[in-house]
Image 1: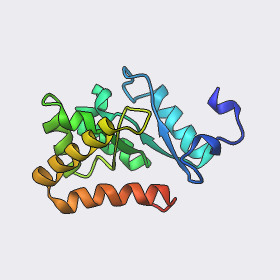
Image 2: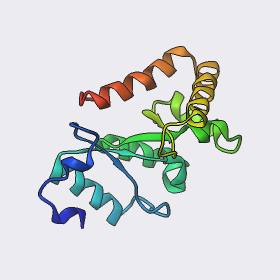
Image 3: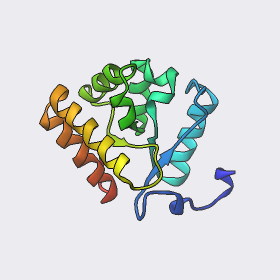
Image 4: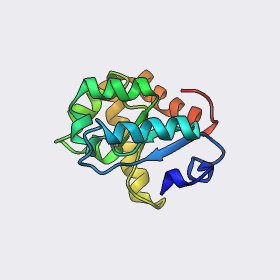
Length: 151
């Protein structure tokens, strides 16, 4: 359906070329899914930001796949809840340190006290485990995306 449109700018972050993207979590990011990404990037000149990278096991655990997608221009977002989860925290922090996680997000679709508290806790963990410069890089990346600058 997406490719039947001439313009998808209304699906991008307001006034930018960055588009929050999700695929089926079972995607292997070979064949059809890679072709779709290439078409998305080339046909619409958008910059995909993969939401919830921790939910894509074929990407989350495969550095070569991360590199391939990143080289295509795909950016990655991790949920703050995954930083707070002991099962995924170490991997997420390693990916943040290695520069594969570009921005932080949530899976909550409203602004409330729980969200703000979780976000702050995740930022505190990143600062403690990865350093203030890494946390600042993540925050700066978000600002770059919202300002439609190149990341």
